[in-house]
Image (cartoon, rainbow, N blue to C red; front, side):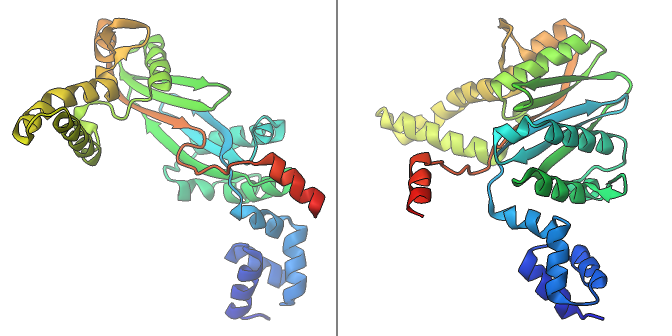
Length: 290
């Protein structure tokens, strides 16, 4: 037998999850040291010791059916591993498992089972097998109605993934918009969906710029509204100049093809992750000195 305190101690020493710690203690009749070995042999402790590493490479992957689209981002520490066949097959498995489930959140997705193991366990085992940290970072499910169509685009072997949702039945138009989103990285669909804090910050920057040009504050405030329009045109998808034809914006392009852009989502691998700066010369020198 073992106590809750034994489970806590094992978690602290290995970083493994509570359920895995309970299984380990069950399998070893409560022997803490044997339980640690059990977790290491299963690859669980070894995998979780890599949690402190930064996984900022990897890939996005998109799958669709008649009712929804799913996009995921799975990270690795190196681009070399991201091109690994085992890694890529696992990514595909994860995406398809989510597509074929009712999961709409990360928590629900992690509990989906494939061949008797959860997606969370699959990632742990993949980390142990490949030998570097693998992270299932994020996912999104985009539902669609009968009169809507998905545009799907993957750039640079999944470094950027985009899903667009358009009213209308022209998949080529939807894909064109998805390619535009990949290239131009809009911040929002339109003015109404732009983050208010971002807009207010931009207005303050513009106001300071105008005042630095020698205009008094009351004039600067009036000039902000004019200049903020440029910000919207550069960052709202519908107002951006269409990348294939700068004579029209994205909204006009969609309208010209009897379509309407409803939404978009864009994942770029590693965005927002603080990547470690590699200093190979120092690393080699430290190994020589060591």
